[in-house]
Image 1 (cartoon, rainbow, N blue to C red):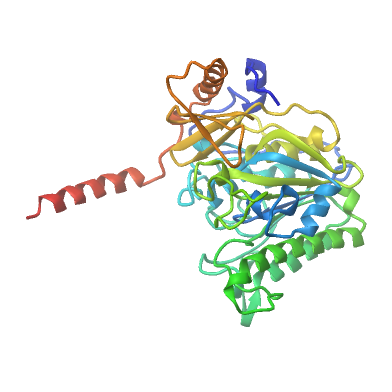
Image 2 (cartoon, rainbow, N blue to C red):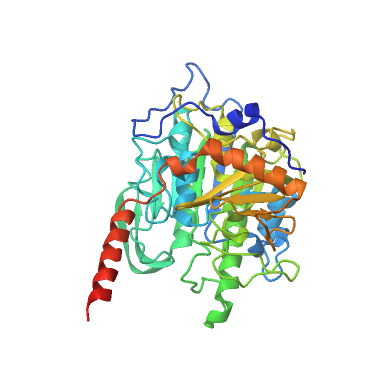
Length: 450
């Protein structure tokens, strides 16, 4: 795919300019069209989000060390996107997915500030689909997002009550009530059963399940299938168990005759946390938390039996702001008016059409960001990188280069950043400036003390 100039029409389609101010406002979803059927050919949607899981852990992306037969099967009978971008950390990614809006608009900049946006002021994928007649469920990780899943439109939810543990636990929260056990239970199994129960109970009407896994986030502990107590093998065990749960979910959909009516979407919330995986013997450049390619480039597999092309690999750029408009497109849901959404639907590609892929992706973490084309990347410092060898290398381009292609790329990408204007949005986490000044005063005082 060759980079080319960004036209104003394309830009307006991609980010929906001119709709909303950046300030606070109460958000109200658009009403479901009168008389519209709740199940008129509209598919169920299951979005499986793995935790800390980049390309180097997925077999069909070329992972050397880890086997994922169930994910590979979904890709073989569905679509695999090569270049999908989340945020580099869990919280900002979840906020981006839920709202469909870039972090500088919502303030969901980091893990610490992802809970800052309010459900009364921001749109929500669950509320959008709920208004379209969908049953909604959030199953699993909710940490870093504010309020409760129910506040954001999920009618049912199951999650861990604290950040202190999420694998072997004695308690968890189910629909707002604390559930306790005398002995430890394996929470991913509890989550899976909750998901299966939700699907079974809503098999006759359209549903949206946000299956937010904790696997393979640390601490890396044994799974019920671990045959050894040696920690050295636990990471591979966690990847295998995650893949096993995906396979069990697909098998249940088959048993209930729901596969051809269900879109299964699988991705990761950021790049891999540990640099242990390789692809073709090469290590991805960067990992979770970094603004390098490995921080935000994640797998994206979509399977829609009987509708999506089988075994197709797409180079179309996708970022996590695209999920909300895609799900709305698939379900016939109406997006609320007066809100700037940043995503572009890739639903046409799921139906075998060419669609209208975005020409660039935007990634932000705190006050750092970059815009990415297939071959180029420009960050908030004005640093340009040649990405021909990504995800393994990022070649910095000298600021005084006279290379015509590099100069044209800089001009295009800078125009995108100028229009987005992230610096004018919410780019400073709440309280961070106060903490910075306090730290500066403390350092000066310490320096002056004899």
